[in-house]
Length: 359
Ligand SMILES: C[S@@+](CC[C@H](N)C(=O)[O-])C[C@H]1O[C@@H](n2cnc3c(N)ncnc32)[C@H](O)[C@@H]1O
Image (cartoon, rainbow, N blue to C red; front, top):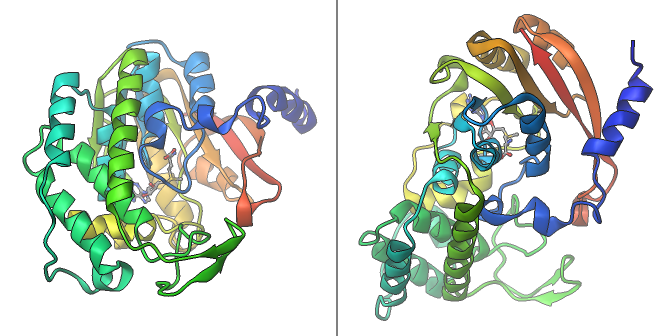
């Protein structure tokens, strides 16, 4: 029987990459950096388990798809991918990352988006946008939103709009994840270690992100081996996967840590997406175990014989032995991974666990 120490040593070699072994540009390669998303796992982690437990053509399922890391990697590997998320924005992002794009149509869209004429200021919108955007930034974002309607790939450009809307908020540069209140005056910025000014425009972000996104989807198109991906905007407690599953790779939300709707509040506002905050698991500790167990039980029932479930967790509350038992799953391995990339205010040692389970 292997001890925890031995497991740690094994896995330390395989899953705990240093910054030199796995630099940021590799962790955020091609479509993985289409849009910021707090709380995703590194694609290389998914790659390791696809190689270990899946074959090309298999169905890989992620009931908590988030920004789509599992689905993108499954397609890169040559597997069919399916995922579910309660956040409409996360579903949009995952669909956009896994979609196919014709280069000529992409180019046509870029031209269309660049020639919109001079935006007119106009009254708009919700209290939220009035509070969080300078007038010029808001005008530019709304003008871009109008131009999207006539493009071939509106969802792709909606993701660009959201990314620019995130950058153009009246938020401190050192507090972009969950800014507490708008900044209207110069402030000392801890990220840039100097005095910074609130953002006044959006056009420069829109131009930069259009270019960046085109390059990233082109890059992914050259390496992917499957484009079979299905994304469901549902509560994973109530949804069965779309067929027998060969491998599950997922990371459930952790209790009380990240509000997945709120982190993209600006996207819900600009894109007019429906919020389902009430059904988001992990907003509190109450009912957390029951909710995650319900999701994992459904996934376990859909697993083919011999199939595995890989669950990435931060189990400092030691909830997962009970959750797996309640889901009818048997723990095969509990692997500890050192996460090296905490930066800025979130610097510090950070570990996550990778649970390998089967029915
Ligand atoms: C830790 S994140 C997953 C991140 C993902 N592994 C990635 O790399 O992007 C957990 C996700 O679970 C989603 N979620 C929370 N409650 C849910 C529910 N009831 N049904 C489906 N998804 C849910 C959240 O919206 C969030 O995107």
